[in-house]
Image 1: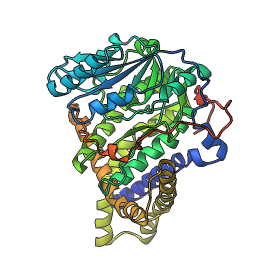
Image 2 (image 1 turned 60 degrees about the vertical axis):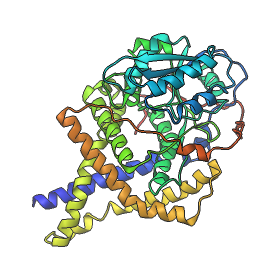
Image 3 (image 1 turned 45 degrees about the vertical axis):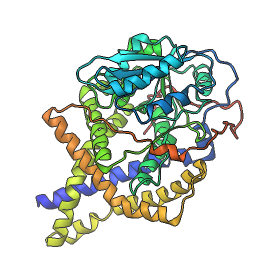
Length: 441
C-alpha cells in the first residue's frame, strides 16, 4: 500500500512540476505583445545616473583581464569598476591592481579579508567604497555589451525603478553534451521566467547584470553573507518591501557567460543554488509577501525538495515496475507526467531554434539529438544535486563551492558587438512592475 501511495505522490509532484515549468517557460511567447514588452525601451540619449559595477573575482586569472577590458569600452560617461579580490589570492589580485594602475579613473580594487570567502561577503566588502547611485553586479568572466548602461540608465528613469534586471546568457552551447541544455536553461530563465516573476511580485533575482539603487541596497543591509544564493535572497527581501522591478532582455544586450567546464562543476554549482533556495525558504522573509505572492514564493523556494524527492523516486519507480505487483490503475496513472514532460521537450526544441536565430548560432540536427538524448541524464544530475543540497542543509554545511571559469565562451563572440535597435515603438517601456497583490498565479 505504501509503495502505491508513494508512486501516486511522485506522479502528482512530477505532473505539477512539469506543468508549472512549462507554463513559466512559455510566458514570453504567449503573444507578440508579451514578447515585445520583455525588451529594453529605446534610450533617450541622456546619461543622468552614476554606476558602480562590482566584480568579485577569486582565482580568475584566466578571464578577469578580458572582462574588465571589455567593461571599460562601455559608452556611459559615469561609471566605475570595483574589483573585489581576496587577501589570499595573489594571482588575481596582481591582475586587478595592474588594471587599476592602467585605468586609475575607472578601476578600483578592494581587498576582502574575510577568512571564509564567498561572493556576498565580497560584495558587502565593496559596498562602502562605491560612489555610484546605482550598484551593478557582474561575474569575473562576463562579457558586457558597451551600450548596456545607457539602456539601464533610461530604464531606471523611465519607469522610476528600484531594480533593473538585465539578461544573462551562456553561449558556449557546443562545448560538451550538457552545455546545450545549460544554455537553454538560461535562455528560458532570463528570456521568460523572470519577467513572469516580476509581474507576479516575487522575483528571485539573477546573480549578475542586476542593478539596484545604492540607497535602497544600503538600507536593506546589502547581501546576506551566509547565503549560498545571495541573489535570490536579495530579490526576496526587495520583493517583500514592494520594490519596483524592471526585467528587460534582448539578445544584443545580454551579458555573455560560459557553462561550468565539467559535470562535477555543474553538480556543485546546482547544489549551491538549491541549498541557497532552501536557506531563503528557512529565513522566512517571503512570509511578508501578500497571500498570492507567498504561494508563488513557497513553490519556487521548495523546488529543491521536489527535485530531491522525484530524484529518489524515479529509480525506485523503475525498480518497482520491473518487480511488478502494482495495481494497473496506479501503473497507468504513474505515466501521466510523461504528457507535460513531452510537451516541455517539444517546446524546448522550438526554443532551441529561436535561440540559434537570436544569437546567430548554427543549430544542426545533431544539436536537437543531443538535446533529446541528454535530457534524462541531465535531469538525473540536477536531481542528484538537489538531494545533496537537502543533505548539506540538514547537516549544516554552508561552505561556498566555487565554479571555475576557463573562458570557453570567448570563442562564441562576434568581433564587433552589434548596436541595439528595437523593432518596437520607441515609446514602449520595459516590463516595469510594482507587485499587484490581486494578480493570480
